[in-house]
Amino acid sequence: MFTTLEVVTTVIVGLMVGVEFSVAFVMNRILNALPEDAGQLGHAHGGRMMGALMPFWYMGSLVLSAIWAVAGWHHHGAGLVVTAAGLLILSVVMSILLLVPINNRNKTWTPENRPADWKEQLHRWDRYHYIRVAVIVAAFTLLVVALT
Image (cartoon, rainbow, N blue to C red; front, side):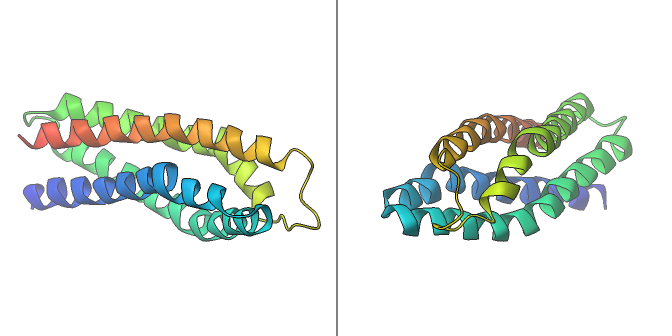
């Protein structure tokens, strides 16, 4: 049962990392290459879709990591799992304080109501997102190492 927890947690976190990596380095570049209105509408739609899904994924990953840390306290790699869970906490805090406020504004924008600085706000979101991706990649790496 413990091995199943380790594998499921690692897969769930790994898939989350893949999605967020894709957003940072693939999807946003595609959207930014579209004509202004289409790109901005794509960002808004993506913000609504991902904004509805990702909180559950982040919290689920954190909860699974915490369960693994507690259940495996006396197993090899427990310190790595605790550190990974700490990084996932950091990613949630970053999301709530830095990324979600921008996303909540972005997901309501249309070409008619977007603010003059909408591109600057999306670039700020991107910068914060790159940092968050680095944090969750580090957490995932620690979980993978803890499996060995």
